[in-house]
Image (cartoon, rainbow, N blue to C red):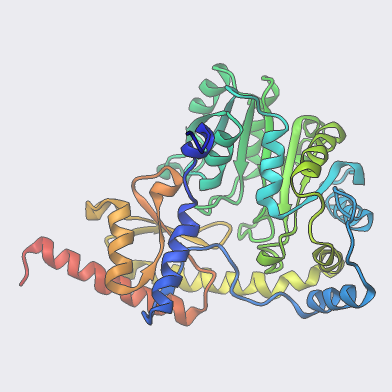
Length: 395
């Protein structure tokens, strides 16, 4: 008897979540583990948002809501992006989802047919390729060389378009590299997309955590007309420290949004009703983002001052998000072995680049206190010193 289908058998677990689970398991066993795997802000959800959830409970928001989300929340999301982009987006272009991850899956499942080619800039967030495969699509990796600051190889992108792409996924700021696409970068990407029939799926979940002078650039602001074949995904997890609340959204042309609503109606229906009321409070209080952003600006600066302490590893100070992407190629070690041995020997949990289609880097999340990060650097230095001493044949 065959129990599982081909797609289930072809899927692999999230490396990030698996490593986080392993780190938590060791911590429960008494190991002093520093878990720097998951992209989860360590700061609490701001108090006004929590109070709004309590109020929603008191007011009895216990029932089903519209599948796409309550109208007030969709209107607030639409108004927020209308202001940012400089043109009017209606609530009919908004669907509220169980985190940005479900929004991404909705977008893919409603546009990608079996055999369709879907482009991803590599290194990529691990769930992109698994979701593409889950809907029967073919993953097309487009390299973003480290020598170019992890920006896309435009020649390779043009070639991929020439071979036929149904959809392109772009993530800026990027998880795992921290690279941020400038307006000039986007102009080049959009020029090529406009000359093709390729759709665009832009994952902007880290849009509030950009450290460049230019700031976050969305293609929807840069070229409003191209929104007719775009889907923009974001949410509250990173910007408001609301990971467990599971509030994300997709913004798309009305026809694409309707298709996603239909699909979600057969999967999860609406997201949690209380979380939706909390999300309304979050969007009404944008100033709540500032303390979290300031914390990450300070941690980024702190790590930048200490990067040289991890020689021969090479790190690039990220332009966005909260990841330090470290090149370990000078060690001559396999990235999986590096991450495994660092966890076993020094109780520091990080993610190997193999999870992101990369055999040279590891990812360290700095969504942790400065004290935790300093401790992690000290442990990693001990680990590196032992490796280097062994190479030199020291006793």
